[in-house]
Image 1 (tube, rainbow, N blue to C red):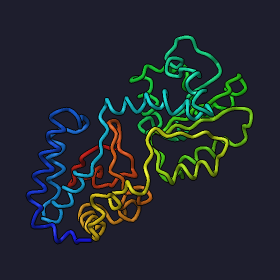
Image 2 (image 1 turned 45 degrees about the vertical axis):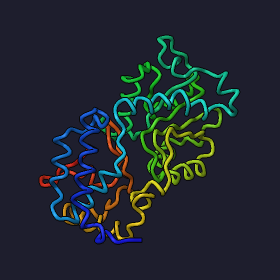
Image 3 (image 1 turned 180 degrees about the horizontal axis):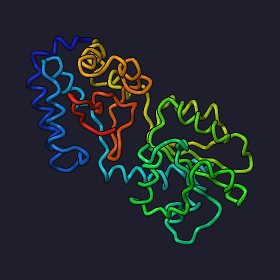
Image 4 (image 1 turned 90 degrees about the vertical axis):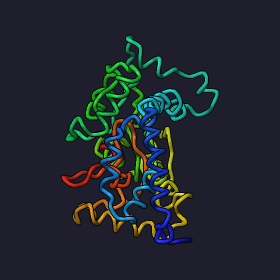
Length: 299
């Protein structure tokens, strides 16, 4: 184990190397949700050698999903994750419904509907409606297959037998659990529920599987505590990295914000960002915005 202080002499070289790599990713449109101006403005937040070292580490650990990658993830949700959730064995998956073809069809069947995980008080900018729009725009999903969650009971009475919940990120499972509880999902024994988050933390998966055994869940991408910046294989040898992060965050974020979300939602300390949005479980120094602090990505 080493201290971040042992790395300060190498900060300028490391900072330059990581910045050059990031700029190449941006120039080649691989990081297409970020501009060179976004990068420069974000890096300008960090002044001291300690802050520059942290910014370089954050940039090095950053995992953005481009528009094309995000579309690929959406496609995998329908073509791979959904069949794996619904069918019980590989043979059924192979012989079963082509759901992408089905959802794109103009001929609407009344057996299945897609439901974004949202609350009825959420604005259209929240992730649930955003994900629904992306499925429609990027995959060509017929919007008639999509319903709001408060219409589930009505659709069951109309004969719908299968509901597919879509979500962008399952973190600890608290928000998803509250959603399923509010819509009394466990009271419906005669229909099939599937839950397909694009990105799911092992903690959230365990909670939903435990609390809602009637929901068939399959995530497109799965992460574990090892995906936290502070458990990252490359950086966990820095024994005081978390201390460095918090000390820098205190300079740029309000005390009230730090008490609520110092290391992201429930301290998950992720480094992921999608083209359309960044999870609040991702470290806030990537996305926090104020009059004096420029974000790298948007929430």
